[in-house]
Image (cartoon, rainbow, N blue to C red; front, side, top):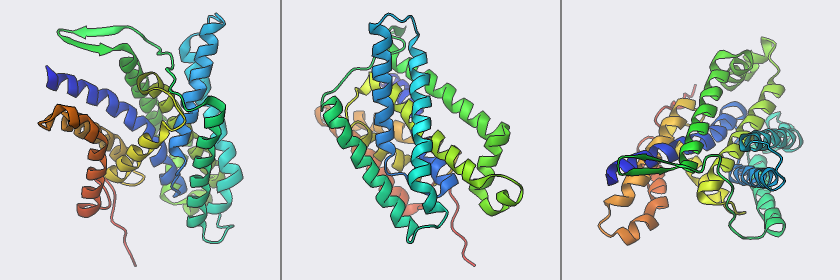
Length: 302
């Protein structure tokens, strides 16, 4: 029963890991930029959902909590569009010298700013966001909390919609074309700047909705995005930088390693403390033996 419980928990957490990591992978794949403020985007989404859901519940608006989730996701999408236009567009259009270093400094500084802005606004306290589904599902002796089930189901649906968008719609195909060859895409009439802005907005909104879904499970606080951002980087490197399929598979691999690794140590009191270290160990092994990731390609030099 313990193994079954860990398997179910790994599948639930793996779905949430995949959702938050797909945003980072999409931004890198299309813009070829690394967003070091990804964790803070997750935190912003968590707080937006927390206050929207609390407002709906306290004022008896009769509005469903999924509407708060959708609204927070849309708000983070607009936030991402504004950030891309103001701070990042000049970098990938080569209007700044040493643009790689520029992006690192800008996104890293933005992350620190958002985290330190949240501290005086909301305080360093943990807050419990209301779950969309508060019941429990019992399968024999296995009991699964409703907040985890609802979060996993919603995350799965969003991932399915994202895959449909990327592979079955004109805009999605435009995003993939820009990711493969922006010059060729521009010749074919695709607005590269528009696609890059959309990719950054979608990537940020995926992190935001992941933060909203993780809030009822792991609580909301100004530093909540840091550990999840580290996991997202591990997943993206493990799956292959910019690979959608690799990111999804890498998310479930990390979730399996964390959950089963925590019960394999002989001392159960210390096993959970090493849970976050498994991801870093997985990252080191990946960089040593397959630095391009599971589904990445080796760089070809002329």
